[in-house]
Length: 260
Ligand SMILES: *[C@@H]1O[C@H](CO)[C@@H](O)[C@H](O)[C@H]1NC(C)=O
Ligand SMILES: CC(=O)N[C@H]1CO[C@H](CO)[C@@H](O)[C@@H]1O
Image 1 (cartoon, rainbow, N blue to C red):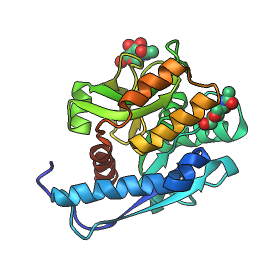
Image 2 (image 1 turned 90 degrees about the vertical axis):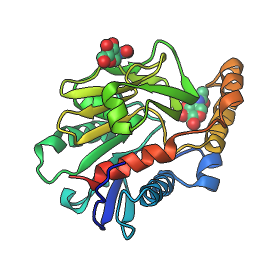
Image 3 (image 1 turned 60 degrees about the horizontal axis):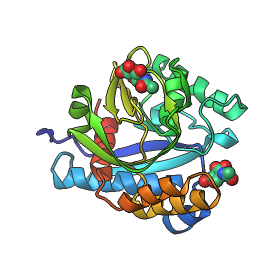
């Protein structure tokens, strides 16, 4: 971990909320703002235990429901803009998604823009904004506990050789946009994580905010409603509670937003 401790401040994260988890997740575990707030606080605690940040550092996360056209007022108020997951398709031609894509497209042109982090649907929105092809995978769903392989740049950014994370998607970013570098891959999905060459935008196809118990609820619900086959459901359930690198990933996201 970085030897030089970053000095104390409040790290301010604006979460662009693009979806609502199913009630079996939202009720006990919270909606996306709560899930990401808990995750990033755990990441910050890890950084503190590693003495990688000042012990007085705090983190504030506020949700903005972009489906209702609610966006942060000023970019300069934030250290990070995070884009959440969603049950919607990033490639759909609907007004709120088109607006979000245009918003993301403009961010690199704005000097006040903070760091940008896209998770799952957010990763795909960033892909679309920068002209990658986004669409359904020919391999169907990538579901549950997964070990992603990090590229050389990925190991540098995520500070490991692999990342164990929960996956819940069938849409993928088909190519790495110009000006971005690939950070992680699986056999199912080559483009699992990307970083922009100016070091301002990072994406993840997996869900660091999902734990085994959360993923179990998604598997149960979507198997019952016919989305997942019994085979896929059984295979995913078998490994769903394996160890994850969520908090480590969260620490890297917090550090990314904290640094210049
Ligand atoms: C199953 O549930 C999910 C919500 O998690 C929803 O997005 C999807 O459309 C549902 N599928 C069917 C076939 O009802
Ligand atoms: C679907 C897929 O694998 N797309 C691309 C992901 O990114 C690499 C470049 O790093 C491409 O070679 C893949 O074709």
